[in-house]
Image 1 (cartoon, rainbow, N blue to C red):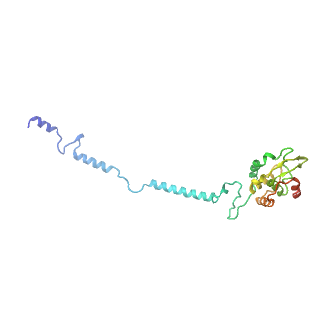
Image 2 (cartoon, rainbow, N blue to C red; image 1 turned 90 degrees about the horizontal axis):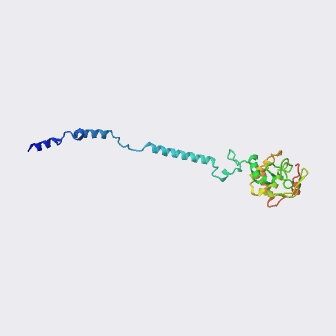
Image 3 (tube, helix red, strand yellow; image 1 turned 90 degrees about the vertical axis):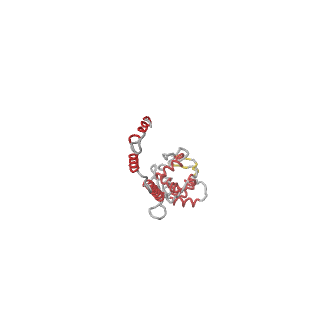
Length: 226
């Protein structure tokens, strides 16, 4: 073998000698083993994060169901009816409470166009309700007028009114009429007792399908001052 071939053999890496970058085969195996030991192995089993999320979701669902059960009144539509009687604390029947504040809102929506928000009425047409003997005294008088209306001439404090009051109460519930009557009987200088929904129900049943009253008929059944 000539010198050229011997020179090429000297440049070839020997078996077991240093490899590329100055690492021997043994050193490379050692480094690889070290890296493999330091590498984190994948965890086995369930992660705690999904379990916590599931628990939180279940707890929220339980709370939402409990809230709806306590505040939905058995999922009855009356839960959204502002005029529905308020349930008593006991298991007994619902108790109605006359509410002048609700009555004012109902009055403004159903009566104020004629009798005015101030209760002063319109001259020559609709009589005033402020300081009026017509709304004081026997509650049946105002209940009947609201339920079936009244047509004919009325004289109050020397002034005459000849308007036609329709049966606005026909489209209202007993509780709503009771609220209106309670408000009118306590506003603008009036000071009469509140009206219960059962009183309205009794009068409605007694009236049946009759039409409007005349002022004379109302006064004969319920004289002013009584």
